[in-house]
Image (cartoon, rainbow, N blue to C red; front, side, top):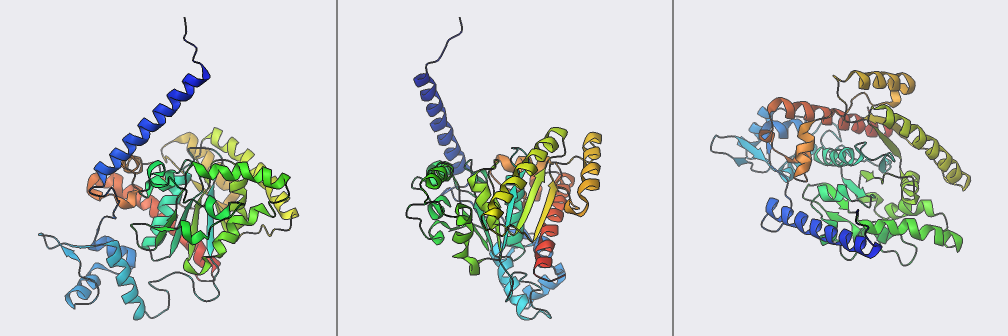
Length: 395
């Protein structure tokens, strides 16, 4: 006879499993990032540093020999390695002698408005978090001042950046604290630096779901006001501190996503090129358009600088995927980014240790696998960076 669990028994099992899993994840973090369980960014070879700066390796060597800039770590094989902080210091040094302003510090100038990028799709597995994390890190490494916001209660973006919600956020500390209806805190109170220069984080956890529960009550009581402006108004408090904000949205069209959509200046929709995903995206687009109409009718400006589709987990040798990609490119033309994000075991394997591909050493993979994945990621992220520059009126 099949055993039927009482509800209390099921609750106890779920809670027990949740606590056991959280304990194991915490132990894994301590083993991966000793002694204080804090993540650090790896160092970069001179070739990698030169590529990030947009100069050649011989020029970096000359700076080093001339005693200019930070002193790199030199290995027994006489190879130079630069930390992410070294690369940022070199950016500042090179910018001082650059022929054009912004050659090495590509962020905002007078008159440029903050770029807020919402990465969204309400279907899980479309690559939102992978896209958001790699985009935020690449932009920071290229010299932009970036704020990454985890708006997904599942908090995968947060975990990738070394914060374990169950252990590190027992008293809140998410964006919910800054957009709640009763006694919100200044958004500066929930921003924390990361181990990557130029990249700050607002982490997420299950507390974000409170906004989904509070908003209907506030609307019924007439206390919500223009609820969809709450993220935008919170970000206005730190507008001058950043060039780009990257928001990893939850996989649903709820009040959090609507508020992020209202704040966004650019929208990136991730698409896995499989038929079921495309069918799901059709519903997502229809629902999004309806919601944007409702928000616009309330007086909001729902225009955006740009909106693009990103093909994710793409396998060039998969014939059915290629047919769908051709269909999407024919239908949406330039709205589909030229560069797709390829499916790669390197990205998946990096995720096993809660890292992005930018954080792991090339030696951890076969060269061809690593180089192929890195080339794909850089092409995607640099194409988005070009959109940002075009929005600011620069080629």
